View 1 (cartoon, rainbow, N blue to C red):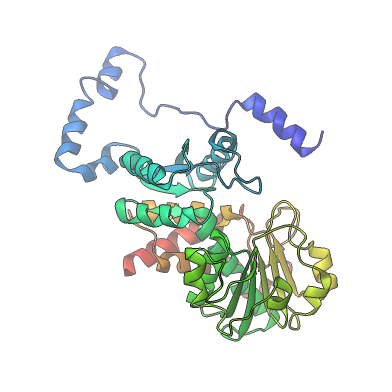
View 2 (cartoon, rainbow, N blue to C red; view 1 turned 60 degrees about the vertical axis):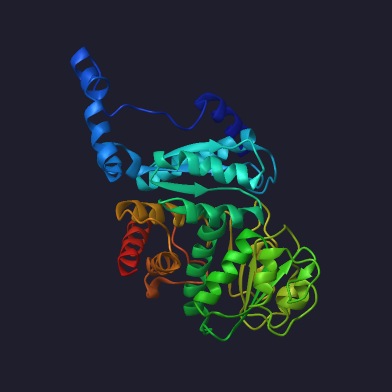
Length: 385
C-alpha cells in the first residue's frame, strides 16, 4: 500500500483528525450547574464588565482559527473549501501536537474578499489568533492586511510569512556554510505570488542583497505591463537594474535561487550559470523546480526543498506553532515584522554553528528546541515593541 492509499484508508477510519473533549467534569447535576446554567452566568457577567477576562474564564487565549477559502490548497490549487478541509484539520492537529494549541478548521464558502474579511472578523471574538491558510494571491494580501487592522488578535497568513521565516533561517545558516556574505548576494526568486513576495520582503529586511522576482510572465520590473498591484509595489524596490527576461536570465551569476513556483522549470545549465557554490532552495511540492541530486551535480553547495524525504526541508511546522505559542502567551495583538525576524533567527540558532553542514542548515520540526526557541524569541520581540 503506497502513501496515498494509506492516507485514504486512514482518513476514512479517523473520520476527521480532531475531536473535542470537555475539561469540565459533568457527571451529575451539581457539576452541570457549575459548568453550565446557572453557574456559568457568573463568568459571563464578569466578562461583560471586562472583555479581557475572556482570556481568564474561557479557552480563547489558547485557541486559533485555521481559515481557508480553498483557493490555493497545497500544490492542488483551487479545489474548494470542502476539499481543503483535510488540510485544515491537519494544520489544526499540528498546532495541538507541536505547541499544545487548540485550533479549529474553518472553510469559508466564498471567494469574495469582502465576504471572507467580514466573516473572519465577525467570528474573531471566539479566538486568540487567526491563521489564514491556502488563500490565493493577490487576494490574500488584502485579506490579511484588512484583518490585521480590524482585529485585536494576531492574524497571520502562514503561506506568506511562515515560508519566508523558515527560508530566511535557512539562508542565515547557508551563508555560514558557504562563506558568502549577507549584503553581497544576488538572489533570484522563482514565483511572485504570496510566498515569493513575502520571502523577498523578509530578505530585504535582513539585508541579504539584490533581489529579482520572476513571475509567470518573466522578471518583475518597474513598468512591466503584467504586474498585479502587489508585484508593482515590489517592482519599485527590487530588480534595480530593471532586468527584462526569463528565470534563466535572472539566475545568471546569482548566489541564491529560491523556488516557490512550478515543478521542473530549472535545468542543470541554469544552476551552472549561477555564481560559485550557489544556495538553492526549490520548494514546489511535491516536485521541486529541480531535483536536489541534479542541483548538486550542477554545483549547488546547499540545497533544500519542501519535501520530507530530502535534507533541509522547508516545513512550516518549524515556524507557525512557536510563533503562535509566543504570540498567545504574551497576548500580542499582532505579529510584527520584528517578531517574524526574531523567529527566523531563533530557528537558525537551534543548530549550533559547529554542527552546520550543507545538508543540515534547518532543524527538524520534531526537534523540541524549535517551538520553545521560537516562542521565547517572539515573546522577547513583542516586549521590545
